[in-house]
Amino acid sequence: SYVLTQPPSVSVAPGQTARITCGGNNIESKSVQWYQQKTGQAPVVVVYDDSDRPSGIPERFSGSNSGNTATLTISRVEGGDEADYYCQVWDSSSDHRVFGGGTKLTVL
Amino acid sequence: EVQLLESGGGLVQPGGSLRLSCAASGFTLRRYVMGWVRQAPGKGLEWLSIISASGDATYYADSVKGRFTISRDNSKNTLYLQMNSLRAEDTALYYCAKDVNGDFPPLYYGMDVWGQGTTVTVS
Image (tube, rainbow over all chains, first blue to last red):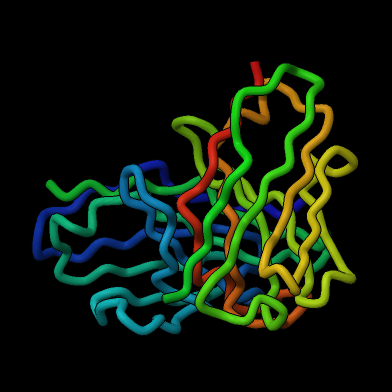
């Protein structure tokens, strides 16, 4: 089955840029979604179809997808961005929705 | 306001059954693909199942295939998850989620509305 690999944690100082990666075999051929989950809350989609941003999501959140790595970039990080972030794709070979293991973003 | 409200969770013994419900409001359920995702305590998100807008197609994660059944009643604006042969490792918070559109299978986009979840404890 298709596997998505994320770093367990990323730390960044306020105002800096955070980059969270999601690795998968030829992931550039798939559409990648990113979800933000704050403690005790349900997930919220922050990027879909690689780089589209839902209404209400700040422009500071952006996505890219190339080769074997998709990346969620959060510019000008704020304390409120501290959360777990998950990437997700649809794997057509197994007809499964797949999540990455999640990355905990810590704002120093 | 678009909302999903899960119910039906609880404490069940190993081998037992539960049926989760997810009541949808603020949108026309029959137009959208729907699904279930769970999160074990302290763990990440695990996709479980997905159902087409009409209900005529379903897919399951290997971990629940043959034990769980997803269904929907569009006339009642409700999604269901019938869970049988429950195991300790099924203990989790169960979320229902709405897809962005009715495309099936959902090659693009993903889930744009989530419920707050219902807790299932198998012990």
